[in-house]
Image (cartoon, rainbow, N blue to C red; front, side, top):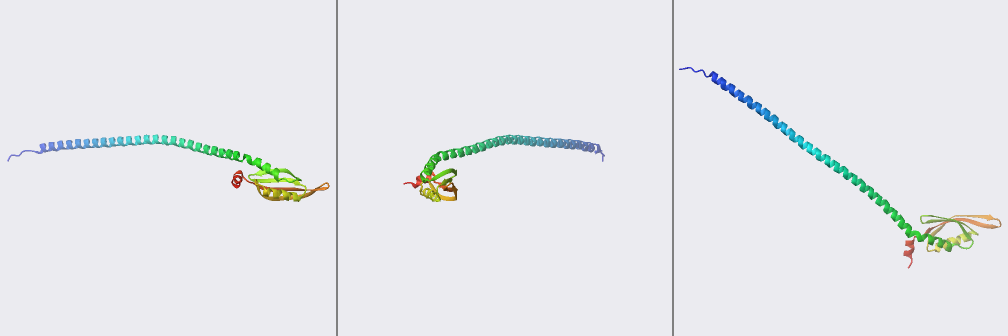
Length: 188
């Protein structure tokens, strides 16, 4: 039988396959690297797009926060203006009350009584004065109690002192003014 040496051919085929395998392996590595790089670029693009959108949202949120602060400031200003308007309206409604108060003080004042000071705090009125006797102070308190514009008189201080041959009584009494709304409700 003839002997044919197939070793160099096999060796060449092995070398050829080895080269093809190395080329395929190198191609796979390059293709894998290119795929990873492309994926990295894609993800970085997504991240940069998302960061850009987040920055736009942050800018819009900051703008809205400024608008909210401005609206809050306007609401506070509105509340202050409404409070001022309410005070002005209340003063307008209570303007006739002071006229009625002084008119009623004159009506309730008996002879021999002189007022030296009238002070009002809210609806409470403090009246200081002098009278020829303490009975006249009692008459003043009775008149205040019967008045439609004043109520709940109370005696704070009565001091009797002698001035020459006369005895005068210094007094401090208080009463409460009836608001116009209550007065109007109470009248038929």
